Image 1 (cartoon, rainbow, N blue to C red):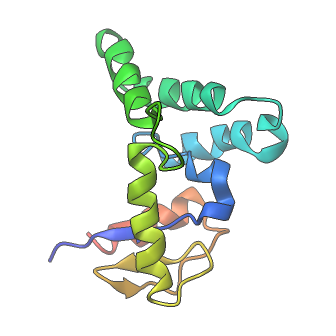
Image 2: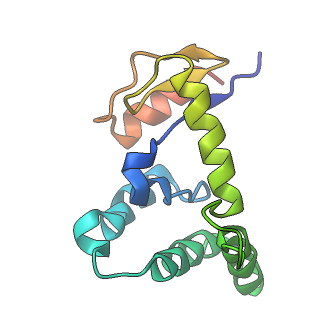
Length: 139
């Protein structure tokens, strides 16, 4: 059986929705996420935040691939001139998942779905160990 967890951040968690660094471990993410809280980013531009995030994700690659990976990420986050208010390519994916979750009456995070079913035992206070235990029992 193959499980596919889906964890959704909603748009009003704007800056935290940008922490898309899936390559970072849970522990590392816990240490770095404070750099992207509102108080730490209030004076930064969107471009500066994207640069930092892309650097973190690219930092997971070997040294020779880091610059290439960072550039690829920044291209996905680029907003094309004349595109109006359509955002970047990743924003369309976010909008899809927001609609998906709202159609299922999910308006609060963290709400995790596994194979389309809500995993109500998930808590926003989960530690790294709790996440690993929860994930390992489902693999």
